[in-house]
Length: 139
Image (tube, rainbow, N blue to C red; front, side, top):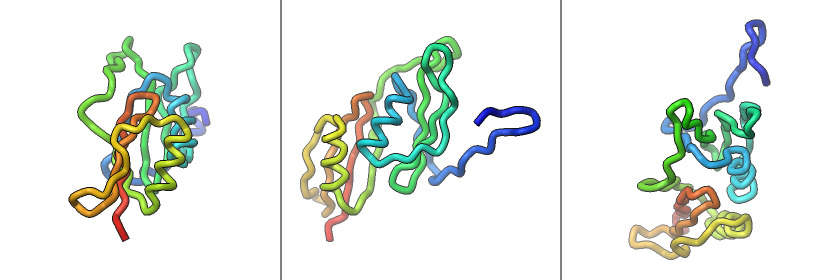
C-alpha cells in the first residue's frame, strides 16, 4: 500500500501496549521465518528498497504485534546484535509451538522443563539471533 497525498496509508492496529520493535539482518526473511516458526500473520510491510531492505514489517503473533526493520546505518540505525533481552511467548500448547519453531530452524538454547514457578518453559534462538522464551502454564 503506497501513501499519497490523496490516499494516506492506514496502519493496522497495534495489538499490545508494549511493542517489541526488532532490528534484524533481513527483516523480510525474518518475517517469513516467524510465519513458519510462530504462526505469524503479516499485518503490513513497507516494500523493500533497491538494496532489498525494508524499514517496517508489522506481524501479529499469538494475539500481539511484533515489528521488524532492517538496519539502516546510514541513517543512524545500525545492527548491533541481540543481547540482554528475550521475547516471551505465553502459550497454551508449548509442545505444538516448540516443535513447529524447531522444525522451522530455531536453535534449542534451553529445553522445555517444568520450572520452579510451576510452568513449562524453554528457550530458542531464531536464525536472526533473537532469543525466544516459550512459557505454558501447567494444567
